[in-house]
Length: 585
Image 1 (cartoon, rainbow, N blue to C red):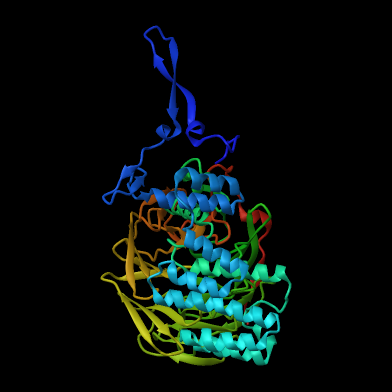
Image 2: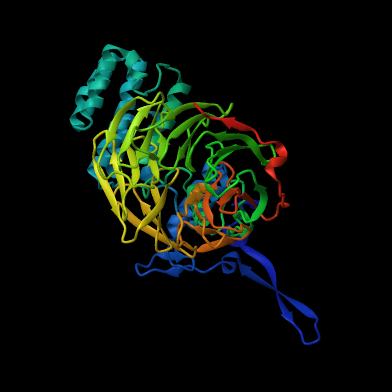
């Protein structure tokens, strides 16, 4: 271990140290009483387990011999050969048994027949593991014989040693093809034909790493196991940290990780004022550089952020004859869809603000819209409860009629472009596979008012009439995970969203003019953000800046929220000029 000066010094002398006991006296002075103790007395004494095996730690779950072996493996992997050997010597616990050490050396020496025999003696009870390990070893033998141009010996190995294993027949056929055409070994992912000792030694080391992954951990400890355990512990601490919301938050092994509440957006950084009526919907672009909002004033606005993250009006999109209920960004953020209430869908060029196309359904009104991930098609919900799909020029190529969507409905599609999600009835969410026509429904006991799909398409956030928000897992079997409560909803459609680092938080608008924030996993309410003077209809968390949140309100404003350690910046967007784009066609 570190700090050892004399390698020849007996272990019994190395563990003696000088220390002292500090005793408090009545007059405030102190005296130091020197004593000599073993370093093991400064640590928690091991506890005997029921089987007589020593256990470490207060929880009684760490086996001493496993702990020591993992530390030894870490020392060797860090290059501290002497310290690793000293730990094995002092503890009396070997990193590997003598058989395993012999087996590893035989691999590195290329003693293939011997190491196959040794493998049988190690004590692995799973015969399939033994056969798979034998195949790896004999495969290496086979290719090294080919390297040495010993074709007949390689063929003999294949016929008399590899084939009798009776596993991975396709692999064996592929090996046979390498005898006919050696160049096929490269596509198989095997070593290139280089007969130098260095090249073979490297491939043998690689073989040893593959065997290490295959053999039981008790036989050969996985490489860098201690590092993996530490990283796993740090990751679990981040998961357990209620306010963890930063990838660059410094972590230390010396203390347990804990973020403060200041990692959650709670300060109004900017107020955007360009809409002349209630703001119903808003959504950040995928890059986080733009924000689109829609209003009952029959317009939508594209806001653009500067280098400091301050937003200004880029385009005001006009042309709808009715209030604009929603917007949807294309995957590349170059185009935007806007949907009027039971009216039309318009497609806009984000750069120029030009209206590129108007989509309408003769005799009916469109109530929702979205993009296919490819960006070359759109889909929309119609007020006759159907869902239609068309190309960018408006040519409809698919339509699902019947009870597929409601008069006022959200519409989403999963990342793989397979499932369209909509509210199909008051208490049900429809997941429609548009290729196979397979349908699944999530049933709620309360009326559904809106929903939101997570970025990874694994979760669905459902807002209900009874002032609850439900988190559902839609991966595999559908399952209700968590419920969120506290916000107010009595009359209006209130929307919620996922957000923050790894989308670990849930944010929602509320009719009491506040924004509510919960921890996704625990359901704990961790923030209530006051500031608006009207109902907050919609929220959107910046997908690239985890410390930025936007909210849209009946007070005709949009608030940009950030960390409370930043100075507040109230900014009226009218000061940047009101760029109005006429989308009339």
